[in-house]
Image 1 (cartoon, rainbow, N blue to C red):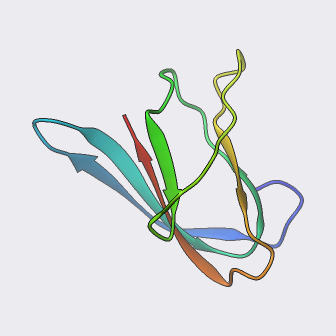
Image 2 (cartoon, rainbow, N blue to C red):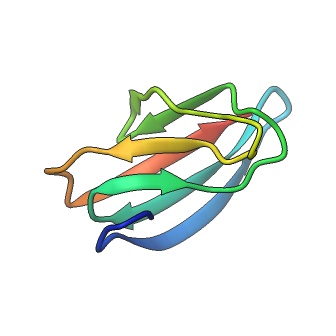
Length: 77
């Protein structure tokens, strides 16, 4: 989390024969970023498709809305 009082509470690896990803549970608003060598196919916050930024720094970034007290991010590959 960048410039916020947010915190990560749990991380789970998602693996199926057709897709893989990571689920991150946390709390607090702000910009979330995590290193990823591969560009994600999609990102969701609380089951809603969310736009994300992915540049040459290989750091997908997405915004957690200001009035979100807890969140569940899924980054799919």
